[in-house]
Length: 399
Image 1 (cartoon, rainbow, N blue to C red):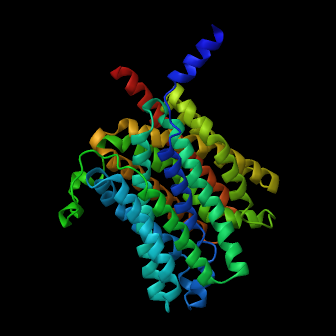
Image 2: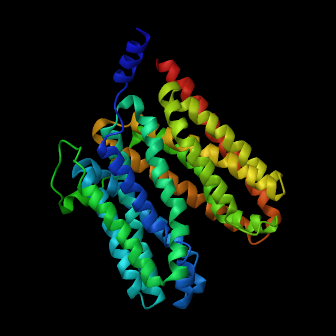
């Protein structure tokens, strides 16, 4: 009897690990690796073109286009389909990988970076929406955690792979390798079955965005939490390399290695917990970890303290990310899921950009200012905590 009840329990659990789910996760990993493998080598490449003073634009131009394209990707995902939007973003990666070899000057390079940003403005929006379509609702958080692991693995694997290719070969081989990975991702995406039932054909009118189509109002609560929690990420990207060097850490990437490993380890568990106990309770735990970690980054002025803080910071973001993604889907309307996810991504990019811009402006090369900036990050995260507590009480009143 005990054995039969266990079998029945297993059989009753909704199936998530379908071939299409595994396929889209693998495509996400390859896509993420494709554009991230270029990042560590592009500054030196731009310098070789005579544009050393424009190195700061390598990331900012890419992010700018990604952010501006989100409303379009969200609308198109909800109208022409998930699959074509995914493929378009990956096609941009293929084209850019080839075109980098033909950039002969600084201006053409910067314009190409601007164009390359369309890739992350389109593919992640459609991918997250597609995943939400094919997995059981009761396992959405778990699915978002796994898909996040795939994408984040590309974030970690890409730079290491890119530097290795450049070390043993050349820039041209690196750029072609980036295109090749994006092309393989496209092949995987083409094998996916479209999940949007009521599609419309693409037309120029599809690109007209009305005011009410820029943001999905129903997803604004998730957007607010995303913005407030990702301000710290913009600060970390901007200041941690110099803070690491100041504390005596020879490998300035050590913080990010510890952060990535820690984040990956907790994502699957956190996503499952958000399915079981709710998105907001799990996010509250993640934000409390975020408050602690950013405070410790500024307070523990040693290599050991920094790496400990990196581990806690990774746990925080690994808990927050899949829960926010799943919460965004929960809040969205069935026919506007793409726009809801695009709204969340817009907030993410604004948060990162705001954190990087403000912290960089205040920092001005003075490492003694970094602890105060990290304490301010904790304060911003406290605002996110308070807002979520308000949302939880507001939800209970409605119930």
